Length: 124
View 1: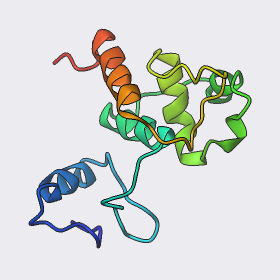
View 2: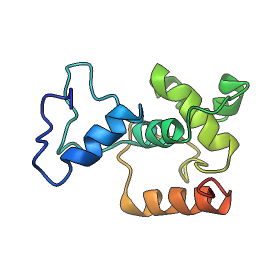
View 3: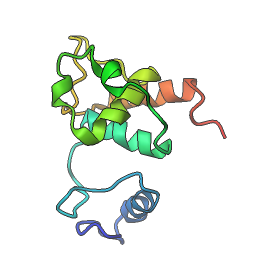
View 4: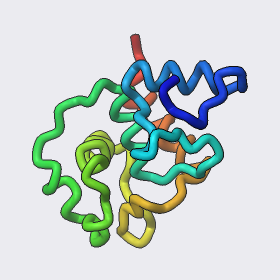
């Protein structure tokens, strides 16, 4: 694995190498994966978007326009978040924001995966 902090003998080593090989995870610009780092909402959307093979998204800015914190979305995460909104996978927080830099909690991940399954995204 090209990410310098990934121990290939650790329980996660093969999984990270697989995700890197498939283009699902790229790691940080410093060449690290961030093994113990928490994950934020825009990173979750990006990983799932890449897992779904980067589907086309039209009117990215339009889909994100309703979120008052849209300016906080990293460039790499705009299309993935727009895709997640378009497919009703992510709808935003109770306060109307998308909170792209907010830590994704377990309940949110469970909801996201359930919505993807309900949308038939995991069907073979």
